[in-house]
Image (cartoon, rainbow, N blue to C red; front, side):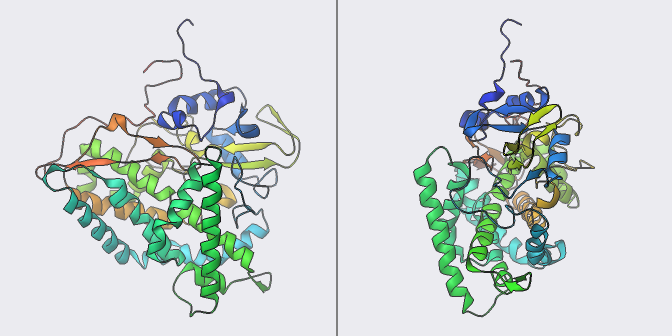
Length: 422
């Protein structure tokens, strides 16, 4: 049709900043592509974007393996543990930390996390007096999950300003600024190596570092390289993704006063809302697999050694699985989303992430009252493995009234299709 805008799926890149600003057209295009889409970027890879396709591949590690890398383009260092390990060894590595990350275990420090959230929000409020515009990312959505994750892992709070920035660079700049990426990787590896040496001789603490130091696998303790790349993974998985979910939640709530009121009046709703925020924001945008043999998948020939990106974010907006997928429903049930991955590699820290999001929303709504997002149509987004906002400028209202600003226009608008209409 004349004037119809099409999307070239062969040029898809999850690191493309133009795509990050408005991913909805591309998500739809790769989902609706006959068979399985193929991108020519980053050396070429298949893009699995439908929910059922992702679900099938993620649960078949024998065919779609992780042991040959799970990111596109690859990280500039050896494989991470356990995400780059396949069964059965994968289960032994995961078993080490699973008891420390159950819902019951992570809830033991809930009061500590609430106090931290309140302290950070009080700092935000002090800066936002008299109608001042303050970046909620900088003051809360970034430092809150970072400080929680660093404490749980066993890093000092002061590492947030260096190590956390390096993890951010690794998540978002590969293939864009390789010099910065190499420097970031060296910083993280160096810092973890220092801490391993320090902590081996130190008394054990209530953190994941101590659990790993005392762990054994197949009858032997973890060696330094295993510790290094296990801890590296914990940092990579814990410092950036939860920030993206929290900032996305506040973007939505800052523009949807009705749902803000619902959460304030129904505390029990916050748990299902946190789950829905993960689906809707999909901060862990996608991870890769490698084909172990020639096959035909959903009518698409694939060869041994081919790379496939499991695009969780697109699967979480699949109308074949979710009713009104672009709409955020606080009480959506059931909600079998892909926000924490799927299959044997599902995120180990999912329960901690949900608790952080729940606390952030509960305390944020209570503390901030009437708040508005400033110029939401001009916000900047960043892509990569993690998808999220760069900044979130917020202004408090003159009193505690709920604002009546326009409904959130997230980059994926339900009425926007890749045929150019909006």
